[in-house]
Length: 463
Ligand code: GLU
Image (cartoon, rainbow, N blue to C red):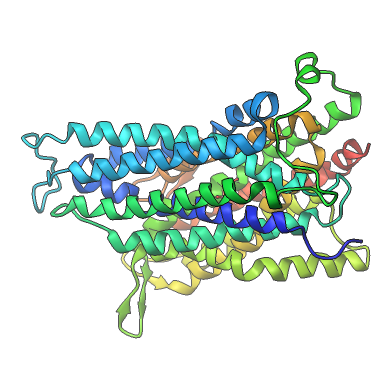
């Protein structure tokens, strides 16, 4: 087996790290910006849900165009430029915004005209959504293309790449968060958006300048150039095994919806929990609620090498679980994380706050699940996709995240607020325990079902 990884992996690592810095940095202050001067909390939550959902929908388009016309390289450069433009429009929006909220009651002042700021923001979101569609699936596809189809280093390569995602996701909010504004000074947010814009430009430029040198296969062939498969793609000549492989991607992507819908509670219900029911004092200092959101990303960076080592060790004894089984393990760990916190809050009085170790423990367990599922899933898609549809299939994979992000917002509305709520009229949610157990059941059932059908899927994956 070849040792080490191609240099191109590290260029893709850096490019994606900077892009995720920009994406998550903007995302960390986005709702705060909206409620500071432009929208009520409810409207802001809705816009946020649509935005985070749509950014994962456009990879379908970006993947299709890359496979059919442009190739990955050009798609990434175009996507990167569109995203930088999107961040620039966010910067301009916050540059012309005016304070518009009555001091204590949070009501938007109709006399203040912030229409231009809203228009610029909507334009910014449009370009971010479109740009992400071109960027996200294509950078992931290129990681896979650096290796030959049967190269055993792929899972490890995607886990390293995933660390890049999360170094960016940790640093972006930390830096952009410095420039949080408020209803008295909403314009201060512009510096956060400007940081996101500059880092996006750095990401795109670095990739543009270094791609020819580093993004090549081991025998020096360029990776991600304009595809030479157009004719084949038009006729859709798929063999029986290719069709089966595509079916496996669809089936696993459907299961993964349950993972992200529960996992993405981090930005919504788990943030309410951090805010209202968690004692955030450390030696007299009260930790800001939003800091909890960087915990999973930090854990990914710390735990990714450990996970790689563990798969490697298990592999040596022939005990490494199959990629499908790793997806099921990811779902099971998600259920375990929710079970852990459900246990912590059982019989908790609504006024009482619990120790922050419960939430920290949940994120720790969830991160182990994420590392078992997310990078391995990317690697799986890369291994199974017919070469001429590789980026489109990556787009299909991210489609599950689009559905999940929208679903996550809906499930979060069940967060207990004193009144009994019900899911489709048949599950009653009265307490935090009920709420968390809902996710235990959801991901637990998905884990067991996936584990049960894994032998069939493994068979379908064979050539
Ligand atoms: N944290 C991952 C990323 O930003 C999530 C990917 C996904 O939702 O599939 O890449």
